[in-house]
Image (cartoon, rainbow, N blue to C red; front, side, top):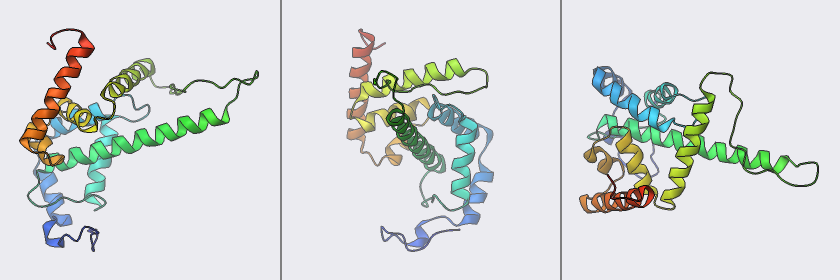
Length: 197
């Protein structure tokens, strides 16, 4: 189901048809799927109740159903990674809203309000590891502050994306990409208190 009448005024012929999307997905090899799974697992870190497999399946489903579109000429893996990024960001936004709502609804007996609720009940094994990973990811995310593009580049690199795919996905010039890498390198040195190695 390809949507018509794109708000950005782009021509429908710029986008792959449903059949082309399905054919391209079938043509992906095992290495491609492994790379996508690595990206999905990185994006799903700290997401209690959401696995990398779930995230990747949802991304592919959205692409197949036409909810997300593939512009001809764009690397398919970069498009799917972009969908993974978007799904992950949506999940964290919802998580933040739930956390805020819970804090607003909870009051302690003596009138004090609790701090940020960071845990969630999950009967599956490894909940502690998931919570630790979530806390580490949140701390790392906070270290990047308002530098969204640097944070996204770190996640993309951790997910196995190539510099070319990252530059394409975020519409970065080589200079912008290199500048972001320098900011990442400086932050790494600051956080590790050393030379960044």
